Image (cartoon, one colour):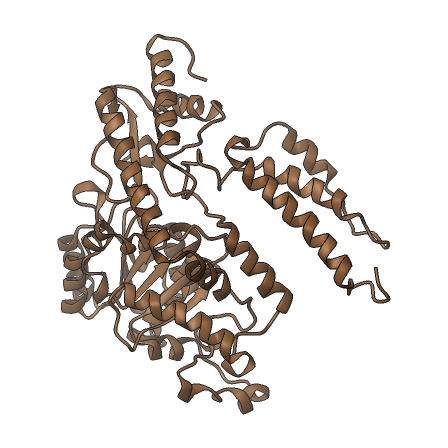
Length: 473
């Protein structure tokens, strides 16, 4: 190291960067063959994680050895066989963006601190808003993920419709609304007893008529209906709620309509997605997760709000030490992101979205998303053709629930374990209407037709062995 230990010189830094980038390249090159989930060795590696850091410098290669081994003893969320939960992305060009953003380390909470960088991030958010048909009044914020985006949406809805009178406010969610919404509602101060879980209609979609009935009952009881949460792709089943019908209810009943599109939102780039999301343009707010549907690294969600001023009023606060620079670039249309979310200090998330979009072009993302819709149909059709599985409905997006016919939950859990034990695919389970179901989620950008064909062969083999009375584990 140079004279200052925390400041490697150019040659030293380039040597370290080559070490890291080389390992990343090796990782990506072998990702399709990497284990799908942690093995028994994971606990041995946990024991190797050092405790307190040393006084003297360590060796970069040795430290990276442990991190790399740990990355292999994990869910392979970026691999082509990862069909569990909601796959992560890991587009490598976003990692380059993160390196640049982290090294320059500019503060983007206030426009005055980094106007060009704020403009870069704002351009992404404005494009998101246009994708969903929101008006020019819309404003967005990039968050750490959908959970924080849902929280800020609930806070904005509370501020607009209830002010400080949150105790009498009611919230309407579906049976398959993401758990982060329930947490957001609780953290925003709503009483748990004021959350109405609306039953589902066909294909596990929220029943708009049931929402109307619940709102009417609450008004008669002296409560104040405030927020309706719809889903544009539930995590559990992949279903898209009837957004137009729910928008009608929200308009008639003066409710804030929030659409959780964290998983499914970016399918709007495709013709099929736009059709299935008809009505979303009437929402008051939308949650998105670019680290899902845009295949980006974990840690970037988004919230769009139809009237950006409502988002700002719900989150803005004054700090005397920032007064001189608070509104320097307001006339240029640059927002202060610190006024739009709970975060004052945060990283420059916009670059990890902006750089891949401008580098690869939107068409590349659209083609990948269209491919995932096609692959989900292949899964559905393959399972239906087998005849031994209950596959209740064609997928709205890219999630396909299924289970063995005339088999109890234990046998279906064993089937899931057999599939996952193959080491080539990983699926997850869920509970729908009191029964255990397997679910396939196709969203990894590296998953292609050959991987889906292999997955269906694995499922067929596991079912054959189960049917023959042999253990499927």
